[in-house]
Length: 209
Image 1 (cartoon, rainbow, N blue to C red):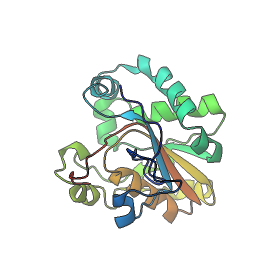
Image 2 (image 1 turned 60 degrees about the vertical axis):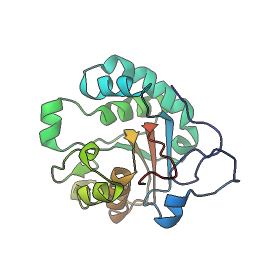
Image 3 (image 1 turned 90 degrees about the horizontal axis):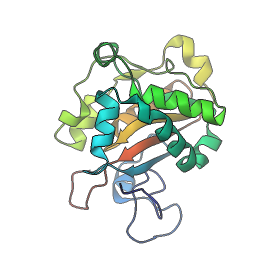
């Protein structure tokens, strides 16, 4: 697998081929500012890492979760130090019922236990079912697919207001889902939202980002 290291976009964590200097943003983040502050990932989502993630997400291979949590702890230290609360990206209840578990919630709970931070898997909900982001043909379609899809229950607003939130998920593709989650959390009063994922898609300059 190709682990991500070296110079990164200060916002979305896209790896740069050469180091342009600290706090540099990639082109897409310049063109469309993110709703989260920082996103970081462990490794590139490619043909080498895809089987590992697919079996974790869909194949009941939860035995890999403790190792993933250790990797996230090591790679995500700057984000974890700043976090007051860890929140997994939620599944809609119908999808959760079919799949039987939320892989992001499992990662977030293990990671929170390792670093001694609270985790609340119910602080963010998916208000409506949406087609899989993997079925969307473009970044624009992905943004439209999750528009208004997330919310914070009224009972959880007090736990969110004024706090630094760390979102946890398995894969960052275009960042549309993380942006939508961050918008919902900020509307509820979150001071800051960062994101930590296992993998991320790295696109070429000619790709639809």
